[in-house]
Length: 250
Image 1 (cartoon, rainbow, N blue to C red):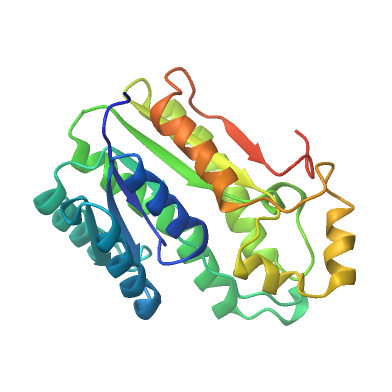
Image 2 (image 1 turned 30 degrees about the vertical axis):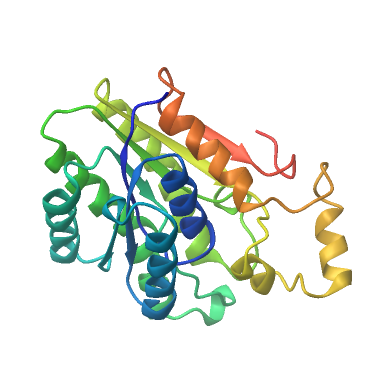
């Protein structure tokens, strides 16, 4: 059996983050859920999880990852109630899409603050609390951080930065801390369905035509890949793990 881990998942009130939390609790790990704004969704998820799994293995903490003091408080609470965090999954994200020439400073700043600066702050505070123990950082990026897309210069730039930050941290934090990046493609979450208008059958089929495996990914696909990094990969750091059905090949 793999060693039980204590895993902090930022932005875990819904979508991929919520799926990861459910998956790792099912594996017997301890999970710290985090949210900043989606209080109702986070509390609903927490109640569901404590009813299905050992309540002592799940903790819910509100913190804005772009705020250093809130992140420090997040780690203090996690350490006090769960012990030292072994794995940080930087999943928190925000979208404020718009055409480049119409994008405001606020749209740019908020998306970069959550998706990139937040990951930077969380990674630093994670390493500070580890106190030289071994650990793992897993960043959740996006293939648009490599090939870009229209109306998402803020989001794509942030994810591109996250991909590069993964490599920088892998170099600086080795050998004790492994840092890797999971890069999803089109995953069947409400956020992706809405952003790309995949409720529309024509738009959905046009998207499927770009994916060799001819389907959207599932949160289970992401969970399997992240689980591999957490529990099985002992000689990987600084790597990008693409989970996209062949939609983007690198």
